[in-house]
Image (cartoon, rainbow, N blue to C red):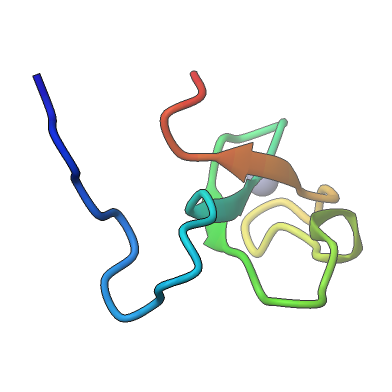
Length: 57
Ligand SMILES: [Zn+2]
């Protein structure tokens, strides 16, 4: 059972580790602060990415 596991070393704000994933091919891109996922195009297939939170499968 995990205790106080920090998933964001170096960032103390405690938010979830976010990234963007492609709903078409499944490629995961790193989230950029201030840039919504749906404004980012997948580098593989050009599909608009969707928000992807780690641990939420
Ligand atoms: Zn894709």
